[in-house]
Image 1 (cartoon, rainbow, N blue to C red):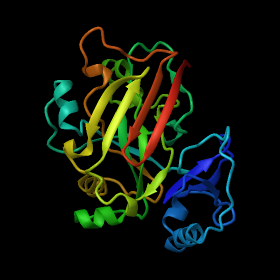
Image 2: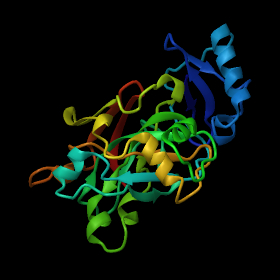
Image 3: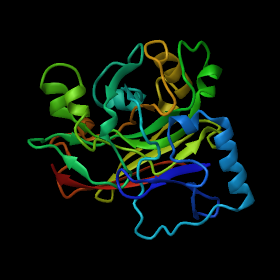
Image 4: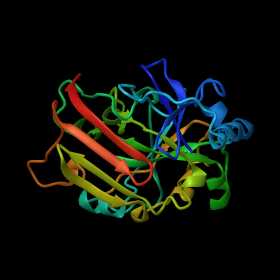
Amino acid sequence: MKLLRVGPPGAERPALLDQDGTLRDLSALVDDIDGSVLADASALDRIRAAAGAGVLPALDATGLRVGPPVARIGKVVCIGLNYHGHAAETGQATPAEPVVFLKAADTVVGPDDTVLVPRGSVKTDWEVELAIVIGRTARYLETDEEALAHVAGYAVAHDVSEREFQIERGGTWDKGKNCETFNPLGPWLVTADEVPDPQALGLKLWVNGELKQDGHTSDQIFPVAEVVRYVSRFMTLYPGDIINTGTPAGVAMGQPEPKPYLRPGDVVELEVEGLGRQRQELKGA
């Protein structure tokens, strides 16, 4: 299933995109798409049954904003330097263990919402990523099979980053990762049953129509199952939590001088195979 949330910020309603590309209203079945729904197998079964029976009312998608596909996200866990190509282009060694950092949940916006370039920023960068959406509480998982069983689905994420804030301003990466609007998510949550192999997905990103990133999840240093299992050893993952799994080669930081960092007025488009497409216009904060 392709689950999503549509409407103004803070007033989104739950919806489903059916196989014909028609937007369907889920409001009669669930209040929202959040961790409580993703952890409730009976609720998901009701949605599947209603979709199969063709009884869900259609929504007019004209002019309708698409919000983040998950409400009330507890945390956004991010994996850094998780593609061989990205580590190589930035001149960094392949990590021996996953690099883990956090983004605040309030950085998450809709897939086509405006991204704000922070005041004083000269190194705002792009990063297309595969996002994991957790569906069951995960603690100390032992096997890859267990890890994948705790995944509700997948989505497109844009891990926008300010490299000067991240690398040159002291401390950890947090300052360069947590600026407002720095995590567009969606358009859909595609349930895990429709993504049989998360290591078989292409990722692409364009800036002003020019292809910048053209990667594949098979290049991940730590694959999805290992990432979920590993993170569960250090923190409890709850339904509705998000894990951004890293970006392939092609970011601005990895390109020759003068590096083409993002500026107000730029347009970024990105997609992950089978998971939909995003488009953001950048403006000054």
